[in-house]
Amino acid sequence: MNATSELTELEIDLFLEAFFRRYRHDFRRYARPTMRRRLQLALQHFECQSLSLLQHLVLRDAATAAEMLGYLTVQVSNLFRDPGYYLALRQQVLPLLATYPSLKVWVAGCGAGEELYSLAILLHEEDLLRRTLLYATDVNAEALRRAELGVYAIDRARTFSENYRSAGGKASLSDYYTSAYDGIVFDRQLRENVVFSDHSLATDSVFAEVQLVSCRNVLIYFDAELKNRAIGLFHDSLVRKGFLALGSRENLRGTSRADDFIQIDRPNRIYRKR
Figure 1 (cartoon, helix red, strand yellow):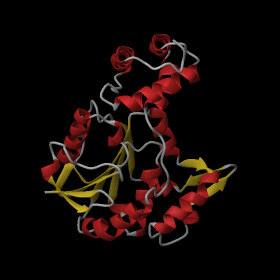
Figure 2 (cartoon, helix red, strand yellow; figure 1 turned 180 degrees about the vertical axis):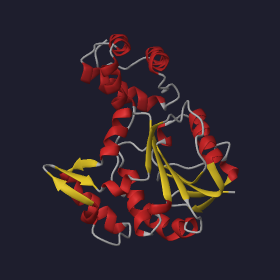
Figure 3 (tube, helix red, strand yellow; figure 1 turned 60 degrees about the vertical axis):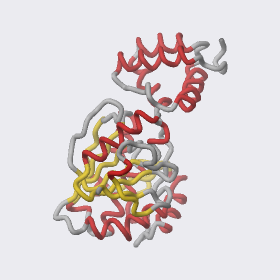
């Protein structure tokens, strides 16, 4: 078999089971078509002719396993991605959250931090950041490290700024970062109240009670069983009448918790716990 040959279900099952047993990262219930594509890309990158050879390499070298996580998880995002969502948060959700004396927000599957910094800026502009604790979680330790650094390529600044303006930004995005060499670094004050933590929606449990869960463009990579588990975690972590925000291609239809939420903004996939 060559690196681009179609992978059999058994090969994928064995690889994901071995990866879980060795490193406790569970990708066994991720959507199979997506997982197959990622594994084929990994075979090419690591120059392995079969998945069994890649499995052998990954199980015996922690550095390779850490790099493999970059293929098993999706790290594609943008600051203020889907600006209409952030505008809806600003106009419909934050005025209600402002009635709480203190806030807790869970950014699940935060990746390299673009969504986190978007929310932090939004909360700052609505004078809520000082009394908000944000939990930024992901299964990828390298992604969490990059999120904590808050450094992004300078060629992304233009798109970031355009999205920010479309999301109702009240200042200039450049007020929130400094330029250095070929990158931009976001202000440390934006992450003063952030807890960065490894957390898996596949294996871990609820760790805090929060008023808002933002988990965007993560559930599309889960199968039905894992999606149900994740929605259950979000439901259990939310306070009464807390808010759940999903990605533009995600919804609660067909999940066991669908009736436990009211959809308050259909285009932007914002729900409120009953």
